[in-house]
Length: 112
Length: 113
Image (cartoon, rainbow over all chains, first blue to last red):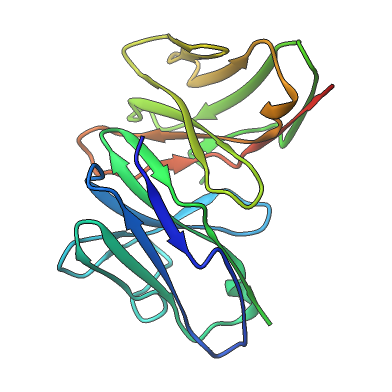
């Protein structure tokens, strides 16, 4: 398996502010992704974090709202910008090793 | 359009019995499938996978069955243990067509002592 470390594990934020989530993976991971799991729903892919270039976003997600960085192979950040209560969710970093995807413990975000 | 569906949001099973979690998919291009287990406040943990060239894969108490003609897969846990209580997600992907995994909605398994 791969080791994925994600922080913070949870946060409560004021609307209108931004939160940056960090993800550290071990060197065995080839690709990195960011997912969202809204209450009672499944995991939805936000974007693929590309090393040294702009992330590839899925339909419904835009860079201005969810800027992503990946300065090197093993580290990535996701920022949730100008937050509203609708952004309250679990955000998950994922690393890919072959066909298997491994996940960090998630960041539980509550926007008040 | 939900390409991967888990129609049972929850399942309750007695300890020692078999748990069967089901997953249906619509995209015939999917050629590999995975099951994940998720405890509260933790990220999903990979359990077992199966390639479309196989119809069964077994790992200890966990067995995944794939019926390609029915576009259906199932995860069997035998015997079920209270520690298996969690949410189980199935996921599907297309090899050599990007790395996106499509997840089902999850099934909450409760194993009663």
